[in-house]
Image 1 (cartoon, rainbow, N blue to C red):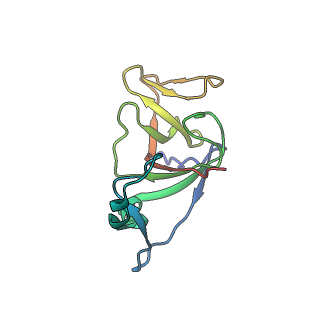
Image 2 (cartoon, one colour):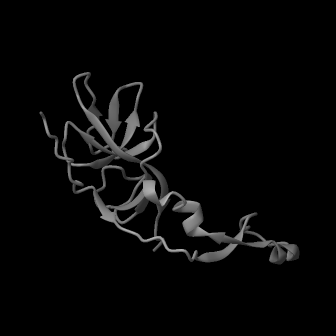
Length: 150
């Protein structure tokens, strides 16, 4: 019998645990967005309520949150960005996933199915070729990005 230990998160990402309770938190939401010019007076009456946990954490059993710690995915992802990751979504072409290749530490990379590569969006980092004998483990697909604007 071969027992494989699940790899740890690498230096590129950090797990951020969250709790789900029966009470949602709602914020004001303007479905039509905001204009950079002069808004219509009628826009004041289009306000709706949006629950961020219902929208982004609607599947808590298959969702986790990580923080970006490295810059291999810059400019797409920045150090400090928070990623909402879903484990029930398939890693398809051009998706960004939390990935381990051959039981190495988990990292965040873009999956290029056609070229069979893990892509680092930062040109200063090498892309990783996936060979036929390699084992690719995907811990989830990045679905949302939360970034603080300084």
